[in-house]
Image 1 (cartoon, rainbow, N blue to C red):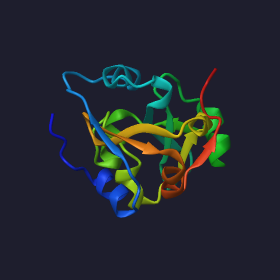
Image 2: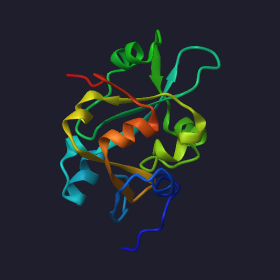
Image 3: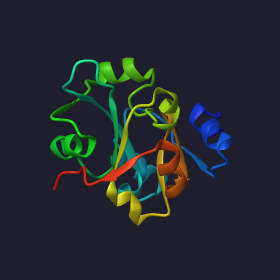
Image 4: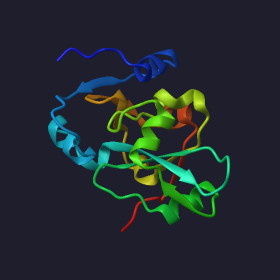
Length: 161
């Protein structure tokens, strides 16, 4: 399958960060763990991007990146982001706020928004991870260290037991 270059890929290129594009056929919505299986990549190394809303008026959304086989813990995320309380953005709101489809939300495509990015600390166990390339069916394998720097991401324990 020919991969069309996405904004996320152009952002990585613009910052001189090497990446490997990956793609999968989209028949229906796949979970991050299912995407990992299709790609033959470990689910714990495939990170999904979730849009989370702080419970403060006019607060910017937070992008939480968690392994495909894990669930986000909202209390842990709130603490890591310095918020009292946060809630998951409903799918419609997440798509409206990001301009991207569920399954294609990428922190790289949203870099210019300046939204806080919190990534589960297990990311530090890997040399590289797979994240969405900003389009359903397209992902990128990216080295962790330069990715964290580019996203100005905070690594914290944000998944549930």
